[in-house]
Amino acid sequence: MKKKILLVEDEKNIVLGVSICLRSAGLDVAVAEDGADALKKLETDKPDLVLLDLVMPKLNGLDALLAMKANEATRDIPVIVLSARAQEEDIQRAMELGAADYMAKPFRPEELLAVIRKVLTEDV
Image (cartoon, rainbow, N blue to C red; front, side, top):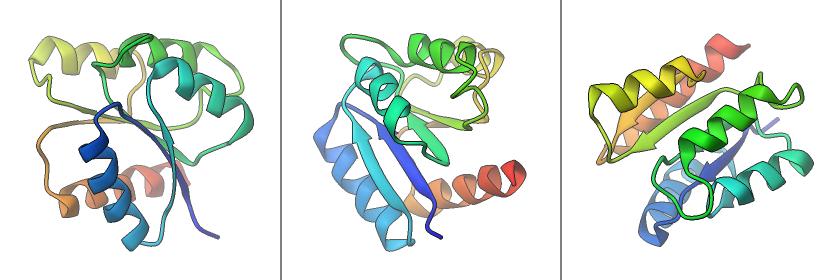
């Protein structure tokens, strides 16, 4: 069975590139444009993993991560943060809130796939 990934990202070019990368690796991809949209989609779709940007309109990634981890229905879904914000305090805060991993943009597709495989394997 294909693993389902929820990509939470507001930059269209990143959505396109990451979606192509994930689909070519045999993964299903759903997209949310911001944290609020992601929380709605998490209610109906149960992804195996969430890829979460931090800087987004409406509801930022840290607030979305906090809400996910506070909700019993979504707290166990692993989250990988993908962000251009690579300051130590951002990484530390995301990890404290429950992120499984943190990748700074830009990243190479093969790096992303390796981290996804690692997190999904740890989750099994």
